[in-house]
Length: 169
Ligand code: AR6
Image (cartoon, rainbow, N blue to C red; front, top):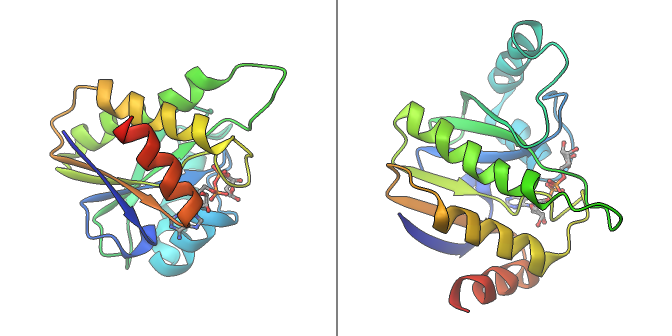
């Protein structure tokens, strides 16, 4: 799997799948989640509502991932994953790693060859950037998946720099 970094907006990526840093409700929010629903249109929310009515009545648990249509986005699928809220008192890194691993597993099930990830948990959920980047890059690097490209789409210079440090040592 080739790992690439770009500074940009995940809603503009032409990868087969884009990952959404969602919350358990799957019903939208701010940050990446807000941008994906805004640009992708109401079809995404409709599918999320159906998922809530069916197998995810209590919401999508932290660390798991599930796919929907990408609506009007250039991608084919949105893979929604729920990152952990950062807490200094408790090590939740295994859950953050699980978001990347599970998203790749869902991508493989869908037959996606390319996938774009945001910096899950590194925004509203407060994860320190260097640590979030280390977990993201390390997990994707260590996961076997029939995916050609995993692209991290970073929204600002500081997040990009943290991922570049994690990728290049
Ligand atoms: N493209 C790429 N990255 C973006 C974009 C974009 N369009 N917009 C923001 N980012 P966040 P979280 C960056 O807060 O921390 C939502 O309300 C952002 O700068 O989107 O996992 C959900 O519903 C940051 O670096 O996700 C949840 O309730 C990174 O994406 C909660 O936020 C992640 O920031 C999830 O919080």
